[in-house]
Length: 187
Image 1 (spheres, one colour):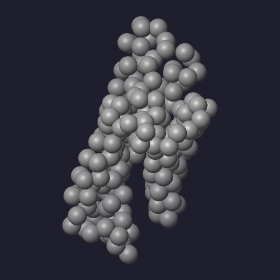
Image 2: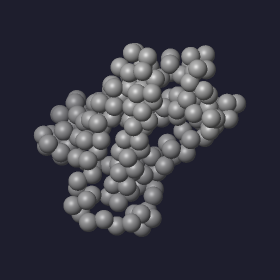
Image 3: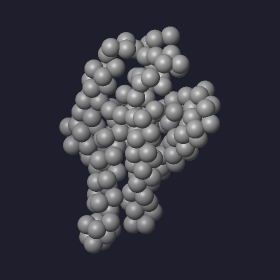
């Protein structure tokens, strides 16, 4: 069953990517008023980073399972794992954007300036860059999969782009966990 028009995969990828990134940058820049989202108790806001670290770890697991499944030609298990990965990513992003909106922007780094400059900032920059790059890649492979029967996917760039997307996604999620540890465990 075709859910997405084949001819519109690139257009939809572009539109979804622009809208998603606009929302992320607006939330990170404090442009979304906190009054636009429901209020939550302080403990909920404080728990979101830990929940997101757990979601990230779970996503690393499901991406790895999906990758292994497709290498074994288990297409159904691959599909389930990658849809679960995307769902975990959506959950992570929803909570992250909610917290950014409620708190007015990213949390400042509480550790020493030398760690901030030479460890935290480079890790955060790579994490953010990869997350931004992943958005259109993920939409593209997802929309390709939704627009074609499974038998036709090998004729598309789904596998090639999917390998790149999965690799970058794994690195980004892993670095996100390191950023969490630096912000909330070490300092």
